[in-house]
Length: 84
Image (cartoon, rainbow, N blue to C red; front, side, top):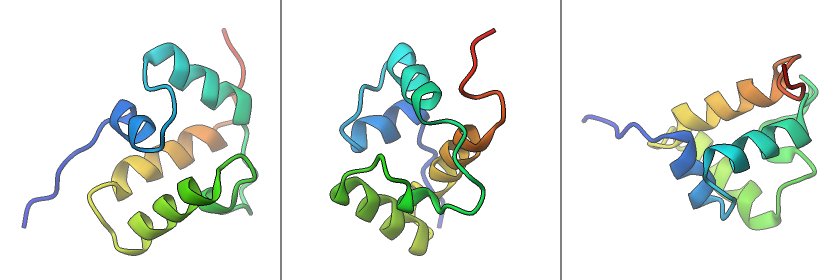
């Protein structure tokens, strides 16, 4: 079974967030860095519905899991919240 490959913009749209490049960058900048000991779905900035979607998709290793992992990594990057 081949999994779909979703993009960041599609994940942000699915979460009901601005999904344009500027909106994605603003979100990552505003919420970075996320502490290593905090699971992505447990971060305080998600609504209950957003957290549930992230948790369910990761637990089920669904199509979204890869891009959710990428978002987690982006939010944990030390320089993610800084602009050059």
